[in-house]
Structure formats: structure tokens, C-alpha cells
Length: 197
Image (cartoon, rainbow, N blue to C red):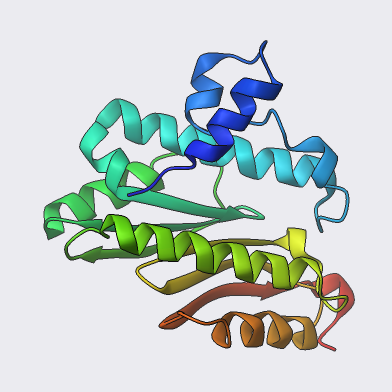
């Protein structure tokens, strides 16, 4: 599975004093400035990032091969475990490890027992994710920082909290109509504070 190497490289360039373990697992160095519009505020983003880092550390220390095959989508305490593994025992082990880490509100299993994505798959997935994120960012009806987007083998996984049913529908429509998308798997909750508009 791909890991966020670009983030790690950017962190190295812009955060020379950060600890190496945080950098290796996509730590909190670059979170603050872009978190203002997030539903949970700055502290919400940091806790999601810390949770993702914590889970990645545990995965890495338990099974480096499994760590490479698993990707996490974390938003507002929800954790979606995404990946391609060799057999059911690897899937069970990954889910056991993730569920054993304190801090998540809910954990969802999206691991498939299939061949891992190829290099061309990874490039296409990255392009799809970038286009969906850009569309969400520039849509005035969407609080884009409330969503985490991950694409694997043309399947988009969306994890987050919508401010209304309308916003959720806009997000899903953007994802479904993006070129190259095979399927959309959404874990989107409605923000109870705003009702069910």
C-alpha cells in the first residue's frame, strides 16, 4: 500500500525540529494552519492525526509487511482500515491491531483479500484523490476539511462529517462523477448540531 511519502518529505523540508518517528508516520507538524474550518476545530484535526499516527506506529511495530499493505482514513474519531492483503489471517490480524489501539470512536473494515495495487493503479488513485479534494475545496457548499479522502484501485473512501444532508449529497455527487472512479464507499455522519437539513 502507498503511504503518504509526499507529506513526510514536506515535513522534513519545513519542520527540521520534528521527531523522526512523527515524520515517518505522518505526524502533526503541518496541521494547525489548515484546520480552522474543520468541524472539530484545530484540536479535532490534531487528535485525528495523533490517532492515525498512533495506529500506524502500532501496526509498524507489530508487522511491517502488514503496515505496508494497510492505509487508514481517519476523521472525527472514525477509522476506516483500507488495504489489500494475502489472506484472511492477515486481515484479521490487521483489524485486531487497529481495534486494540485506544482513541477511535468507530473502526470500519474495508480490507480486501486481493492482489495489491500496481504502480499505475497508485498513480491513477493519487490523481483521483487530488481531483476530488480540489473539487470539494472549491465548492462553496462543502466544508472540505471535514472529510478525509482515500482512493485505492479506483474505489474512493470518504470519511467525515457533513453539516447537512445537502452537503453530504454534494460530496457524494462530486466523488461519483469524478473521472476514473469505480465505486464510492462513504462513512459520512451528519452533524447533529445542525439538524437534518
